[in-house]
Length: 227
Length: 231
Image (cartoon, rainbow over all chains, first blue to last red; front, side, top):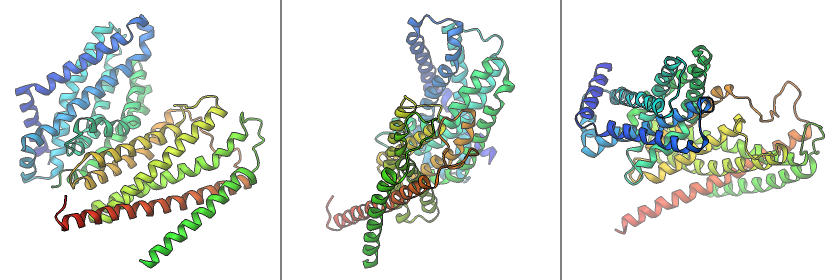
């Protein structure tokens, strides 16, 4: 099954890099969010010290919204082109489609997340004091949990014709609020203080939910794509 | 059919009797707490309705979870109808719980809402999830909506009890009434709470049954419309 999933992921990434439609819009979107944050705090005359507690929420809100933007197109493209039926006719397990989508979404969203960190550092001229590696570890893990739950939810939301665009945030935000977003933000703030070992309880929770969502998706994804 | 009607009447009578009893127990029978640690002892009376509403909402969402699994496994429409009706009623009771909580909070804590409070926040997230569930049911036009809603009902309900694990990071401000090492509530308070919980459970059963009847009638009308070639 893993081989089939990799084939689907490769196909997704290849088609994405031919048009660069989605990844480019995600870059621009995350850039806009950063600019919006900068102007929101402009009159607050923000310095390194005042900025410190705001870093994790700014980063994760950007990741979350830019990521949802990416998740939205992941299934809707297939649905609109009619290629989803083709995928479903392939002689393979339906979960392979899900795992393939996870790999491609993870790759693309991670690219956007890392670029958002770069945008953030540039705009706010923030000094990580050498703690950038722990922060990136948290980003890697948090984004993984986000993508796992998000891909499942976007598979559900793609079936709505009238409110498809808003359905992903409405369904996804309450699900990830306590299970992904809060532990990630907590872990990031601990990582910024320098000691990644302090963030282990949060990272454990992120890992636990990643496993739970994978198990749920493995059980339920066949029903998502049923016709 | 006749037995069904009789059951309906029975549940209605029981709900009425217990609601009246619960109001009497909560307002008159139970004593006002006299612990000096409380800022607003009289406001504590809302507790009997608050906890009962919260209990019913958890029960209703649990029913959604089980009915969703049954629907995915067997594909029978009645399980789906039951899940839908229970989600709607659950959201109403959950709203009651989140409204009565801050009313007490403003008297006791001086603020309406405390995000640090685990139970409050998790109940609120549960409410958000099932509001999203209802939006999903409204947003998907085709026949798929029962299946998709069942999937989301399962995901949503599974992630909430587990959130209690992640909430260990927080400090909870919520009063722990039922089981604490410092001693539990008095017998009168316990009786009052029990009356409230029983009353709300019967009320839930009654409303659920009525909602289910409406759903059945709606689909019957749809069938009839199709038969005579209407819309």
